[in-house]
Length: 138
Image (cartoon, rainbow, N blue to C red; front, top):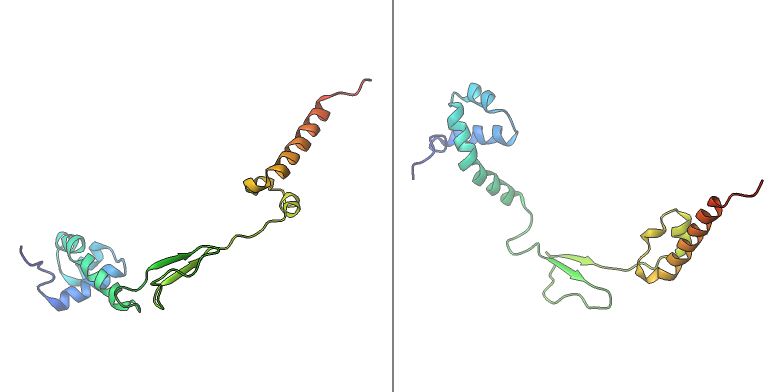
């Protein structure tokens, strides 16, 4: 495979890669560097991607193999193999107070463990609807 004409000149490649990284337009880069717009476009699609990935990898403070994600569920120990460079997601369940949720106006945010409370709320709403439909005799 042929070498990219921009990559063949390391100084030019460095300038163009930096301008592409700063999201400068292709026409502006062509004016500043003297490279043809089409050449810059091909470089951006094929070579710049690798340069950007290498730059991000070099900036990363994690060593290869680190950065795994482990999940600790309630009642279970920390998963085996979880090390200092790994991320640990700890799942905790919060006990909700039904009265607080209803007072905030979002009773449907309750889970299935509160079916009785939801049923009571539904019966109250139905009774209010039925009461508003019944007209008092004049």
